[in-house]
Structures are given as C-alpha cells and as structure tokens.
Image (tube, rainbow, N blue to C red; front, side):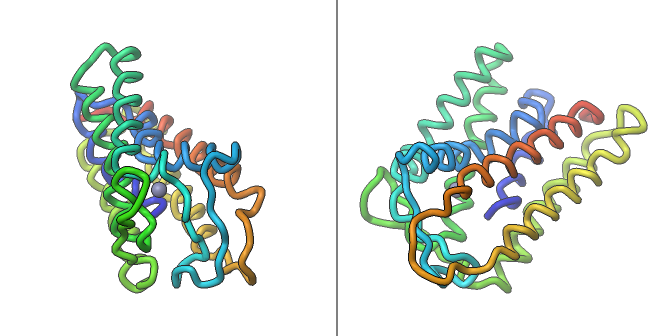
Amino acid sequence: MFIGHYAPAFVAATSRRAPRLGALFVAAQLVDIAFFSFLILGVEHLRVVPLATAMNGMDLYDMPWTHSLVGAIGWGVLFAIAIKLLRGSWAAAAIGGVVVVSHWVIDLIVHRPDLTLAGSAPKLGLGLWNHPWIEVPLELAFAYGGLAFFVSRTRAAGTAGKWSPLVLAIGMGALQAVNWATPQPEAVGGAPPAAGWLGLFAYAVLTALAWWVARTRTVR
Ligand SMILES: [Zn+2]
C-alpha cells in the first residue's frame, strides 16, 4: 500500500486531541520513511525481481529495523515522544504512535511474506499485491474513504479550505498512478539507486499538501 496508509491519519485527524494532519501523514509513513532512508544508507536492502508480486517487482528481503512489528512499535514510541515534546500532550502522543504502528498492520495485508515480528522468521504477509483486482479498489477505498471522512468532520476556514482537499486528492492520485504504472523490472538486480529518494520525495510532497489542508480546515 502507498496512499492507503493515509486512512488512519485522516480518521485520527478528526479528533481535536490528535496531532495535525501534516504530522499524521509523517506518522502513517514513518516506517517507510525510515526504510527508504536506510535503503540510501545501505542499512536495509531490497532487490528487484521480475514479478516478485503481480503488482510490483520488489523482493523486500532485508528490513528488520523498519518492517518488523517490534521495529514499527519502536518507531511509534519515538514518534510519540517527539509529539509529547512538541505538543505537551500525552493524548496526541498516543494517537500519533498508534498511526505509526498502523503502517505495519496495513502492510501485512498487501505484502508477500516479507514482514517479521522481530526481524527474523516467521515471515508474514497476506499478499494482496498478487491480487490487483482486490488491492487497487481497497487502496482507493482506504485513501479516498479516509479523505471523505476527514472532509465530513472538518470545515473550511476560508476559501482555500474549500479546495485544499481536492488538491490533496489529486496529488495522492497522481503519485499513486505513477507508482502503479512503474513497469516490472526486466531482470533480477539491486535496488535502483533513485528508489529511496523517489519514495522520500513522494512522501514529502503529500505531507506538505496535508500540512496545507490542516491549515485551511478546522475540526467541527
Ligand atoms: Zn511499508
């Protein structure tokens, strides 16, 4: 999943006690932000394998620090501490931490068995990436259902607030389309050098849009 990960962020952001939507967009993808950073640094690894799954050619064989359940909880705790320091609220910290861990749970639905509990076997994953006719509508329902819920429980604080969710919706759709349209690799190989940076760039764009949406709308 890519934009489907934002569903918990949208739902959480309708609580007055939660961090703002921009921070929750970081939370929803913090596990992947760490993964792409570790990919660039050579700490974690993927290789490309043609048709590793029907929808993409990623063999995610080494990501113990980010995509283990224990790792995800660790990132959730770090995020919660950061929110507590910045916002002074334990409620906001807890909500942010839960959104971080939701990433691993949603990944569990789509990944082939490459997720772990604590870094080593058993490897877990229900593999919906092999079933595009289920995965694609599910991902769209998560992302846009979440956005619709957020819009229904917030109101525009000015003219920009009427349009900002639509701009975010287009941004999410465009980046997801690029992700889905990326062709399968032609041969087995290492991670493409730009992979980590592209992932971080996509998350940065969507986080900036979410930050703007939160500034232009208020919780009812
Ligand atoms: Zn992930």
